Length: 154
Image (tube, helix red, strand yellow):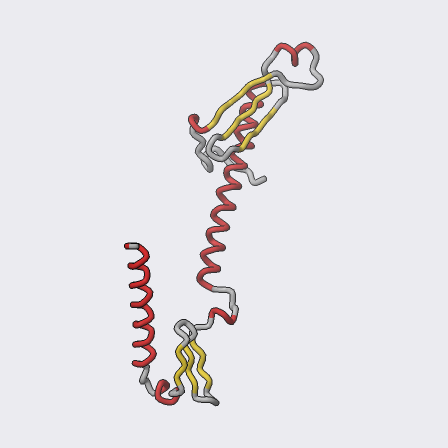
């Protein structure tokens, strides 16, 4: 586990429950008379950490350090997954289904895959006459907006 220092993770006292109990195992009469084992439960995340050595103070400090490490690791993993999702949304998968437009020069064809528009005017489009594609994209966008507006009102 990564080591987390006190300044890395702030743990509020309201967020944890500390239980003390008698330790189990070897230790003779000391084990039977002293509540030295510590169990710390972090309420928001549900993480439970225990420590059961001789000193309750050492157990408490050790359990808090382990809890900080767990929370630090959770935060790091969350940040990594958010960064990964952000990158994936920006880059895409490279799948052919993510095509926007295809220019087929031998056939003189331009296809916009978002709105399923195919025009056989590639030479004019290369000269800058793109009004027909822009108008079709605007019409599709307006139809989507009207459909969403109808869903909200309905």
